[in-house]
Image (cartoon, rainbow, N blue to C red; front, side, top):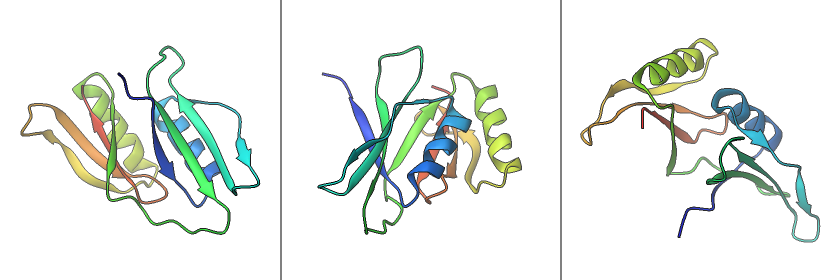
Length: 124
């Protein structure tokens, strides 16, 4: 088995979609819309992999709050964590955990996406 996708609900799927594309080099599929159920979504993926995707979705007439969970995205290096953390900070994104070694031996920081969801930036 493998992870297919994670879903992140949003009040503004366009804004959130562009944010994940900008900072994490994701590509977006077309808007999927089920008018009968009142659901819209995009699937985001990395161009060179067939791995797990991020689904950004919204529900007509429903305001959502940030998730109590988080998503972790690996840059592949400590330098990548540091660089991306500073880019996010410079662009005005809230950094909620500064880059540091974790108890599990990885290196990570964390920010909040535009909807207030926690996004961890890891080296692996």
